[in-house]
Length: 301
Image (cartoon, rainbow, N blue to C red; front, side):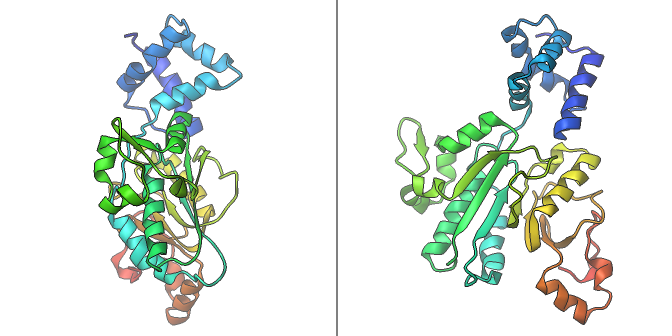
C-alpha cells in the first residue's frame, strides 16, 4: 500500500474539508486504505500524481469516486427509534392536517436510504391508523452518488431485514430471497433522492417541517459544523423540528434560531407558538437561540 507524504495528506484532507466540510485531519490511514486502489486504477505512481489527475479531470468523475470512498455510509433501519416516537407522538398531533398542505421531511446525509424508508413506513402506518391525514414527501440527500444509487434501488440484506418491524416485512417489503429483499414501490413513491453537498444551499429551495441530520455533525469541525447548521435552518420552517444524533452536539453553533427541546431535538423559532410565549414572557427573546449548551433556566424544555 502506497504511503501518503505529509504534504500529500495535507493537500487532500484540506481540499475535502474546504469543499465538503469533512474532517480528515486524523484519518491519514483511512485515506491510504481507501484510495490506494485508485492509484492503480488511474496508473498513478504516488498520491501527488493521483491528485494531479483528479484536478485535471474536468468531468468530475475522479473526484466523485474519491468522495464516495472517503465518506462513511453506515446506517440501518430504525436507528435511534426515540426520534420516530417523538415525531409520531409529539409533532404529528400538532400539525394543521386540514390545511390542504403536505408534510415535507428532509433526511440530510441519508447514505444508503434506510433512514428515509424507516420514516416512510412509520408515516404510512400513521396514515393507515388515521393519525396522519395529510400527504407527505421525503427528500433524501447525500454527497455520495454510490450511496444514492443503492438508496434508490432499495435492496438490502439479512442484517437490515432483521431490524424491520414484523408487520413491515409483509406490508412494505418484498419477500426475502437470495439473501436480500426490496422495498415496495408504494414506499419508494414517497421519497425522492438527490445529490447534495451540505455546505451549499439546497438547490430546490424547499422548506421542511422536519429535518433529520443525524450522525453527520460528528464528521465536521466547529467552523464547518456551524455553517452546516446555519444552512439547515434556512430550509426549516418556523416551528419545524431538527433531529440530530444523541452522540452529537451543537456546541459552537451560536446564534442559531433553534430552541432546545430535549437531547438531539431542536425546534426552529419564529412560529405562532413563539408569539404566544413572547406575550406571556417578555424575556423570551433572550432565550430563543441556542449557543451549543442548553440553559436549564430558560424554561424552554
